Image 1: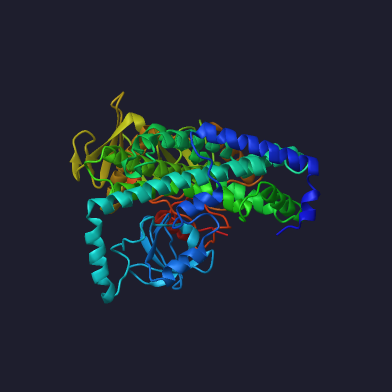
Image 2: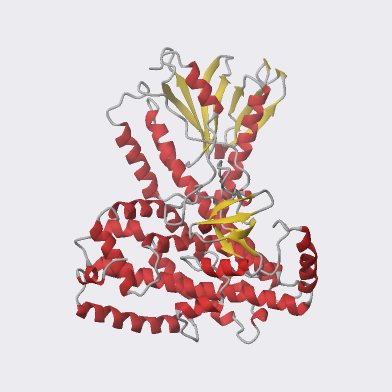
Amino acid sequence: MVARGEIARFWSLESLHMVSSDGGAESSALVDDNGSEEDFSYEELCQANPRYLQPGGEQLAINELISDGSVVCAEALWDHVTMDDQELGFKAGDVIQVLEASNKDWWWGRNEDKEAWFPASFVRLRVNQEELPENCSSSHGEEQDEDTSKARHKHPESQQQMRTNVIQEIMNTERVYIKHLKDICEGYIRQCRKHTGMFTVAQLATIFGNIEDIYKFQRKFLKDLEKQYNKEEPHLSEIGSCFLEHQEGFAIYSEYCNNHPGACVELSNLMKHSKYRHFFEACRLLQQMIDIALDGFLLTPVQKICKYPLQLAELLKYTTQEHGDYNNIKAAYEAMKNVACLINERKRKLESIDKIARWQVSIVGWEGLDILDRSSELIHSGELTKITRQGKSQQRIFFLFDHQLVSCKKDLLRRDMLYYKGRMDMDEVELVDVEDGRDKDWSLSLRNAFKLVSKATDEVHLFCARKQEDKARWLQAYADERRRVQEDQQMGMEIPENQKKLAMLNAQKAGHGKSKGYNSCPVAPPHQSLPPLHQRHITVPTSIPQQQVFALAEPKRKPSIFWHTFHKLTPFRK
């Protein structure tokens, strides 16, 4: 905690009065603008729903419930993948029974597999704790209570109360979230902009991203929620339409989530200096914010966008098909799942383009447009024999990206050198499987072959794989490439031009002055067959408490088998 004397180093009493008066005026404006009829304090909102875990943790309240014999369960926001026997692994959406929560970062819990530690920031507490989930372990003595509980919940009045609890949680957490966003914008960003000697415009853009845009968006969203909220009979509230009307607006979280890892790095560098630590603590005290460090506040938008699908799933569970909001809630649940998947996919693609740019720079004699002008992901790579009309065979390494197929040739002596030989537009060709045997058109006996036929000119390109399994992988890769392209078009998945240019610029700087191909083998960007987009999970790095860096990322991919073999066979590796 920073002494009060430290605060005086940054603001005079006059500036303190200015901040206080401004904050009060804007607080009233916020209430009017977002449509709330009551001005809730943070403490009142916490008390309104004590079973919801507020930022900073409510460990004492949770442990009191546990000691009273209550079953306290939490739902996983993200996958937690761990190799440590002392940690509990789970997937997003899994339910964990919380057995002990004294530590604010790590809780002790149980799932259907075992009991172990897990990071508290990876979960949210369930609203209706009375319902013991099926995958939470229970002793024989608890089975009767569980059956009684389930029977009681079938009663309409109990169902209404459960739905009321979820509706109230959604409303209360939205109001608390708006309070956090307001505190960040007014308590931190406004004060940082006053101190130009400490922060550059670029630094603030890196640390806070587009959180001010998120704040404006969430105020409009909360305003619509308040209009749909039935205060007298909350279970009759119909809020599904609000999520559907604003689903496109939630896409702004993609930029914030992609920026968040860089924000954590920038903030961590500043926090190495005591003056910045004192400054940010002074900001927190002046804004009368709860005792959480800035990086904890900056994590809340990342957590928030992941909570919506879980909240809506829980609301759908207690919404009968006869309820007027059932269809909208069901559609909203799917929509918010897609939003979360879209954010995750954009994150993955941004990581991919840096590797693709470095790969292109390593290729000797590259011609034409940069690969990133049309592509953002490597689907498959491997060796194929290309056969010409004259019957000549050319051994090439092919790289299948979205929208294009690039061919390269190995150097005869230095096998770790690749020369650019050409590319093919995958949007303009169709793949045709070729049966083993003599081909009439080419007058050749073929094995493990397939053709790429131009849609415009009927020009045919013939390829042969060494093994049947290799051919099968290429046929599947072609199908994956077409599916990925279609998904990107449906979701409007486009990498900003400035991101592409920056990736190429960084790759060229990194490779400047190096002899292409002779320092290291040009490693292909990572690739593997991913499941359809709707089946992918949002995941974060393992074993990291809340106050450290979190990022939306896919599980680590295995390296290409081809490149592993290629490296081993390179005859002149240093």
